[in-house]
Length: 341
Image: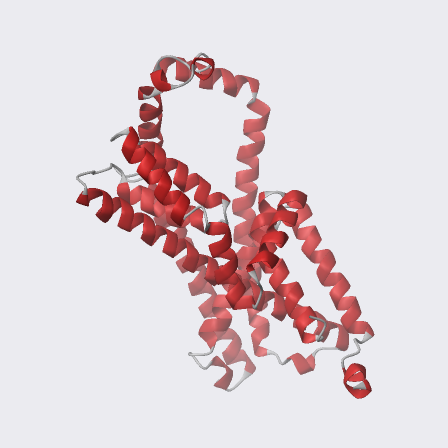
């Protein structure tokens, strides 16, 4: 037993690597660099996954490996960019698009305005012109905030692009053996590899969750409701919105669920009630669905991830909710390897 404990004793380089990894994880959240980190990790992990079936490791010569990996990384960045562009084009199509959905939701809310409580109804504008004037006035009052939001959106796009390029450049290191690194560098590479494994498990699990949510929404909106003679508008954009927002844990479902319930009001109040019940039963349990599916990938119980998500949300907001499963998966993998948990 003493021999086992001695063999598991951390070296100075490993301790330094853990400290640096923890600092880097906090800096990423504090400096709002999570989009760049995730973009880089996505490119790197895709290169890592695809390099195996392509048998890049069996190529002769380091230069040939670098060329093939560089071409693969470039192709992945191009495909990801095309997917983003295609998603934007879909949501800005001629008929089923986000502006049309927003317009429809505004019309429905205005239609049901008379049914609202008097204390709330008095604060709402009475006609579309009033809405427009109120929006213009809000823009004048919050002009600086709007500029900040636009600037931050531009910076996020730049960070994502830089992150993808960095992920591609780091993937070129795949051709080098870890044994060629010095002790501290080797320890840091091992920490990065574990973090990448946690990212891969969590993100692909979250994609399955988003796909499952979108499937349930498509069945309900496209099959169940039509069986009862109910045909809602903008079904395609609602299903697509459910998938896209479902990539963000918990908060994404709140957005898509709100849109579905409001659009359901266009038919009747009873259909909106049925949609709300459906979403409560299926989607409001997304916290536990998320924790269970991801937990099966990282060998964590649902309550563990729930606590991590709540604490990270309190500390870092939405970014903390998104990062919590990945951070927790990485930390637990480190502790598990040392036999501490």
